[in-house]
Length: 175
Image (cartoon, rainbow, N blue to C red; front, side, top):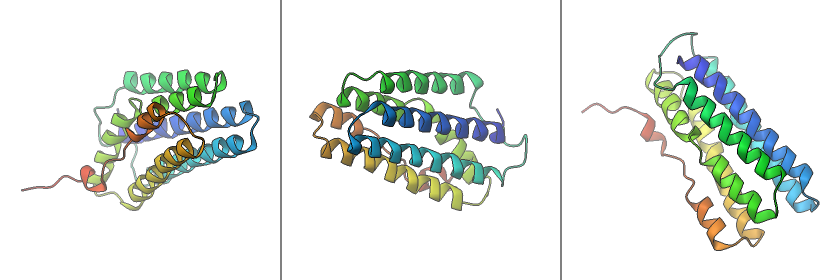
């Protein structure tokens, strides 16, 4: 799959994740929970915007990636399952378990492939940096909310497992 197509699909996945968070915001009655999920939706929209801005530097049908349509469909399916779990949550902890699954899906390997190609084709690095920083903030927000909401250590542990690779990870270094 070409870089431009993969990035377009990733933007769509971010938009679907934003929808999941908005649905969770509607499903919870507590103002603090509604605000948290609405803010998480905004973060996902920021991710989609960063990807779309990065796409402006990519020529169509360039840089064939190892990302397959099947892998993208698998990620979309995981987001759909997690979205359903968020809406049909039994409690806040169940919702956070679904979030940890959604945020830690196969989408990470897809992002790694796309960001690796994007960075190493000498395309503007600003988009990658913005996306990277935004993702770090996103994960920190999840962890802080889990602590603030008093979730069980097991749930907080799942969120601790979410991580962003350092920016240098995406850059090929020649010896």
